[in-house]
Image (cartoon, rainbow, N blue to C red; front, side):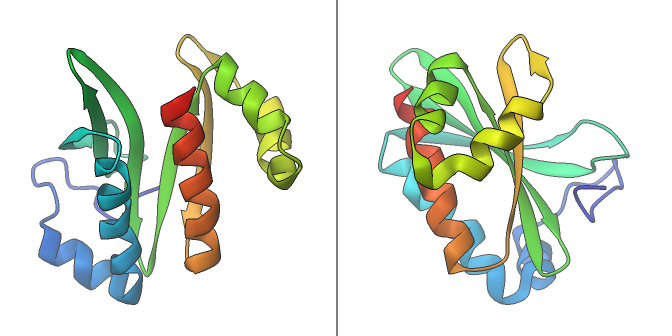
Length: 141
């Protein structure tokens, strides 16, 4: 289970998420601010299955083009981010020695039409530093 919110009939409120994430809620809100530096965003709550639960999907809007950028799954005291990388972004990740673990994980990931999926848990400032780099790659490639 990625999200603690598994009741399909009711998506979590921001207050509930803040309580669930506790001190890590600051990272949750920082992601939106980071992405807004690149353009307009739209946020949607999505429920894909009971297994994954509710997630917050952030879409980057650039003119007429809309891109699913990141999916955030709240959990108790932390949250999981899911990003899907296309071929060019994966090549960029492979070229960065600091991202070797991410590269290895992506090599083992299943290939979908839109790319390869990468899941990453956010517990600390160090986690956010890596996520920021991955978001920049996702946006630019």
